[in-house]
Length: 137
Image 1 (cartoon, one colour):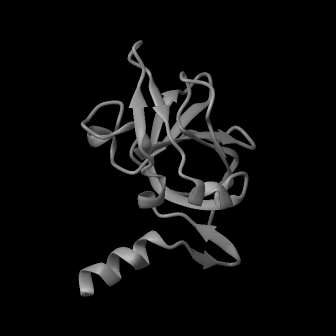
Image 2 (cartoon, one colour):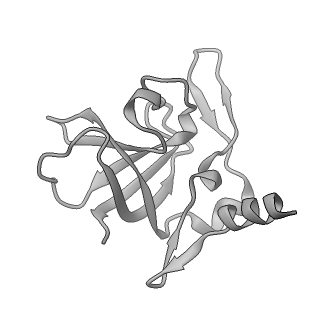
């Protein structure tokens, strides 16, 4: 019973300063693999209430293309990240910063906020994209 209660508490977003905090468990959407080997996310309808809403996420910074200002936020540190480890594509979120950040450190644990967009069309981008990203707190 205690375990069930803990799981329920982790899977329900809480409010911090009126903003939604999304636990990674909510972003663990199912996905399929296309014949070309690309991933296709399947966004459950109950997730729709978060679409295009400002949210707060916590995780580890992963540089994708530093010169091109492309970063991802990972549920796991770089060694276990989707790009390098055994994690799934639903454990990373693409970050699009409002302003180009100063030098960011790989595996730096950060709290960010931004508008969460569900990528339903472009197989070459991550499932979730955090637009207007800024550091929180």
